[in-house]
Image 1 (cartoon, rainbow, N blue to C red):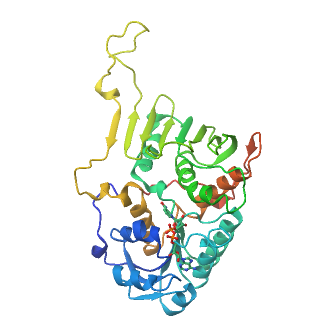
Image 2 (cartoon, rainbow, N blue to C red; image 1 turned 135 degrees about the vertical axis):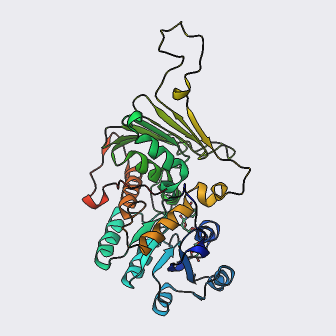
Image 3 (tube, helix red, strand yellow; image 1 turned 30 degrees about the vertical axis):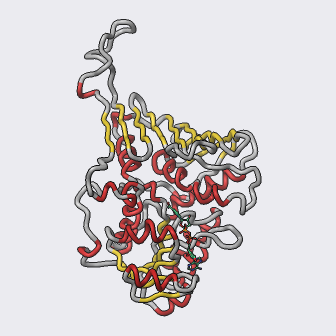
Length: 374
Ligand SMILES: NC(=O)c1ccc[n+]([C@@H]2O[C@H](COP(=O)([O-])OP(=O)(O)OC[C@H]3O[C@@H](n4cnc5c(N)ncnc54)[C@H](O)[C@@H]3O)[C@@H](O)[C@H]2O)c1
């Protein structure tokens, strides 16, 4: 969808009428800028902080603003609400409560991650969406990033073979105390690696964890596909270090992504013109058809692909949701089904004590969708 020519917001003939709920940092930095590449019309803004929603409305072209969600839903004819309200005083996400209110008013819903702190809240939203016919999407933007999209395409090639092992480094903190307040960082950040892992490797069937003294950890993973993997959470790394590196190994091929911007696909092959025994190779290169393939961003140009919203997948996820609403298509990537797996992974890591922990399979509606979205 995004490898071909982009459409600008003002070029779409039909647009989804949305209300933005939560005019904070994420709305300002990544959600509103994504509207410029989506069939979205920002109708209203909402935030309880006095003056904030009105200021956002004036700055970003909404006709009205409110300090409360109920008032906005009663006064406006909206197709969808976009929620970025974050956490309540109980340190749990407010998104489930606001999503339920919006669905009851007949709206479709897009919400920032984390969708919830408990699988039962995801299931309740799913049940309600089934009753109201609402489309519900969650901001699992990594599922839409160009790097993850390309790796998914590669790992599904016959020549790659079945993915066998996987690893991802991403500095997360597993606190010693596991109460809601201490867990906010993990709850807030784990959706990113969890979404990436789920998109590329599918459901997890078993975990075990080695936690270091400072909350850094290795989370060992077994997938229902038969593959195994590890999430390295290098809490304690330098603030100057990149966050992310990941690799999928297949059967005779592997693909590596560095810092979300450099992808190397090691295609099936060998060094030299033909296979040769150890001690008989004088050339470390290969024939051209077996050479690794490499992509990286070009920081020279003003192309949208250099923009934060495209590198991370924000523009893609917002447009995908808007198009699902406009064309009455189910949200099959980054919907409640994927959020169920992400939330279950959070619960499993949070509740981990010792040994191997088997995770029960999800309900049928949570089966991963075979759909391209990036
Ligand atoms: N995907 C990402 O990369 C990413 C990055 C940052 C934040 N986020 C997510 O976005 C969400 C918001 O984070 P943030 O950094 O913008 O927080 P923030 O505190 O800057 O903004 C939240 C805003 O929501 C408003 N709000 C709170 N309760 C409300 C209510 N009942 N109705 C309307 N508005 C309400 C607050 O007044 C505030 O302006 C969080 O869930 C966070 O995890 C995602």
